[in-house]
Length: 253
Image (cartoon, rainbow, N blue to C red; front, side):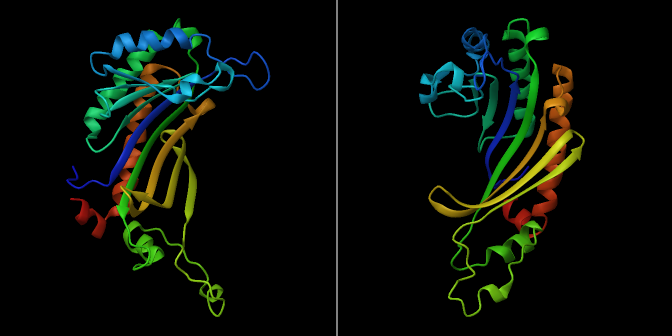
């Protein structure tokens, strides 16, 4: 386990199909009852209920928008979020995979128990395991492209002649690099993203690793989803350690 892990946030997200009574409208007819039924089942572990400003949105445009949070305590993590057609589990610095995995299984149990007639009504169409990591970076003093190449094995080159005698600096004010690759285990896609950002008001390199399965690729039953979770974590873990191998790994240990 890394002592100085770069994790900003770990997110597990599950979505299910919504009804479309009219074009552009997406609603979950069981949503209002689901909020209470889920809270009854999680309140021992996540007693602090937080209603988000998005809770005032009209139902017909609120599909897949989180509206409620259940936390350990005010401003504490981990937490569960719920909205029409969506439930997420989020954790930050306190994240440990064994604990997070246990909480994912609990969220799955709760969702499949609380959703009215889940066997026929709950049609899972989206699974996502997402990690957001960050490392402080001084963009004025250091070359981000060299850093990506030497520390994260990502080789991006911008043609040098673009900057010669043009008055343009080769220090990027911003960048947002995204890559998506098909995956077999679990069936779906892996997404990588590198972006200039800030963490706690300090310039940073933010990078994200997602494993995502949607529509036909997304498993439907609770047991299949549990298997998906293990495979998705194995993949993100493999990619993370391959990328940081060397200097960054030593820094995070």
